[in-house]
Image 1 (cartoon, rainbow, N blue to C red):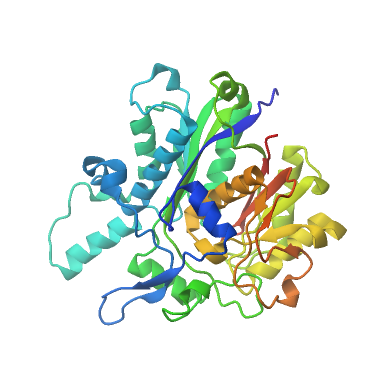
Image 2: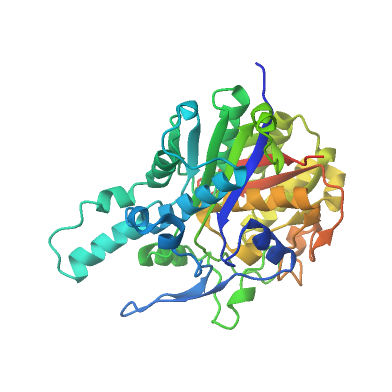
Length: 415
């Protein structure tokens, strides 16, 4: 099979810091936390938890009131991120374009329109309403984001959503990559979005006992991957998107190329719903390297899944040690969720953008709040402060989900 090179020509996200992708990356390099505190007015027990919100995001401003009104929060975040990536790629927005009949969308979301469904329950059971808006079902569908992206940009190829918990958007990106590489589609929009602040969702995560706890003052430092005193993950809302393009197609139109996607590996631990296994992660890492035609010696950075859970962090480091052997001790690794939180189905896309920008800017973001390393997480080169000016050839981005689903993306720098 003739494999085509796959360029990344568009990057877009809804940033919790309020700026564009360049500002987002600069804040990460500075070690700036986006973690705030969510407090609701629910009675009798309000939510009070560290959380990463996007307070500067206005769906009406980003999408227009008419379109925003037909979308749940997760889809608003997703479509806005896709529009930003599309603009960054230099494509005009138009709904009718005959040359786009094979261009497509693959999107990731763990929760889809959960907020829309929760609003329906509140309207029926708390407010005593007998009927819901006819838009309620459409707002809640998991494919709402990818469907609207296809409609708004006039993309006539595949349009699908992937729901694979925390690996959702990494898998969406990997599947889009395969379609461009095979020649099936010259251009794909891909990424993910989630809005996990629904009351029942937050309570479910709390019940699993994997959330970091803190008061309002300590919230910015509450996510501490690889630290001996780590207490769990911090949820966040967000949307992130990439435009993947056939290399020759991109060159022919004079597009700016941020980086190259080289490979993709995905596996299942097939052992436990919530307890990760190093062997499954190791196979995904090895698959990504083999698919990219890389060796372990070619990798200069890894953006870790690094959620700050008691079980997850040591298992990921064990998988890295197994794959990289003696070189693991010199392999730079960081977990940027320590600053931007865990956007669930959007996390893989957010971290893919971080990884691409690390390669493009020749700079490595740190793991924040890592003052006392857990000995069980030792054995790799943890990045504690930003590193600049390094020669970076290739990097991996890890996404490891509940259910044992693993996805690893390999990216290359552009000379």
